[in-house]
Length: 560
Image (cartoon, rainbow, N blue to C red):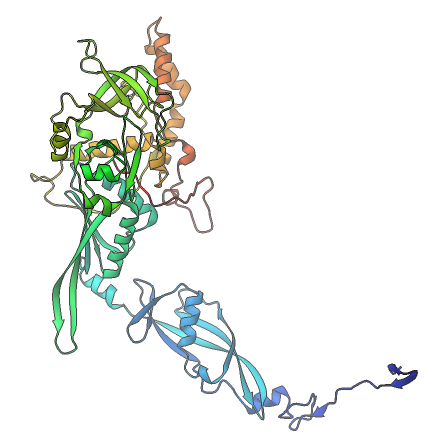
């Protein structure tokens, strides 16, 4: 039935619009009208829009670094079947500018076949404005060709263009032990040609100047530093005006470490809000945090502020003296701008004088939240120390008050010795740290070289501080040691308790309970904070480790 419409009571009939068909001028097939009056098959037989487009392309690939050559001299990094590689392949096709590219994608090939296949869909105008779409495949032949950087590296593995000389003028290397873990976590030394461990620091060698500058930017984000750059002319070509330089960056970390005692100059003390001037360095990240143990006030400064009025440490951890805490009482209402500490009045005695004389010291300390009567604390004995410094002498000459004792941290040495005497450390720590592949300086046995005993002592102290400071270990990756975990499971708590009962005389069970409580007070790293070492598990492709904890943390770091 025909549709109808009403206009003023009159009905008008309108017929349907039908689509007309025509016959193809070549084969006679009924088709819809188009400008060429030919079917699609006849158009394809008459016109090939892929004519003039390159169907086979040769690309150069470096096997060492996995980069592709973008003529004339640029090398591009791209993974297989990635967007970057697809863009690179399309740009290599000649004649593609004459048509419109509609779609492109990879066709799977064997990874070892040295062949890449890309399926392209294009459109072009033919025969009086008719649009023809066609799909075709382009084959890429991958040829091995070593890039200049890899060629130079293979010819001389020790060749470098830029060197970053990282130094800190202190007597220990605990700062570099922590910095090594931070570099491993953020993979900051991925572009290093060589890493060399020398006295007072580490040298990092790079094949490009930009990689060295990127590493210095990373260092500036984690430690307070200053650096200077120098360059040396290696060769030059007068014909094309090209020069080859070797660049050296001298990076210096501030000579202050955690727990150092510092006497601030008068100008710096006034700029810090009349802080101190005798203060403790409580944290070093990309800023230096100093705390007054008497008032519990803190202040943070960055590297430019420090180098405006540089100061050195009056005393460091080497001068720490053990004290016995006789009594401690928190100061009510005394709250500074640092919530990590609590102000308290402490009565202490030197451990060497305990039981010999009645010398007792009264001091204010910021460790009121962790110290208890009977604990051992490490601090600076200001009455027996020979402190040298212009700012300190000026402060004393003006009549400044110097405390008798400055407590720094709680000590667990006695508890560790008792545990070692019982054989509690036979299994060892159930965790481990990764290390950088570094070359050691040849003249380590010289007068300025560090002895192995000092290196072992620094590393042991660094591991102990990781156990004591949760904030410090939260910034690095600590891995489970599968072998030591198995040994702990084999020993077991019951077997250890049976061995104690066999060797314990009658009537001394109370002492054993006290020793067990002391072992519980020893700081340890919980297993929940440890990561699974995927390299040690030897997982095959397609398998995943379960139970590993991955966390994102800032680039701050604590130094000892």
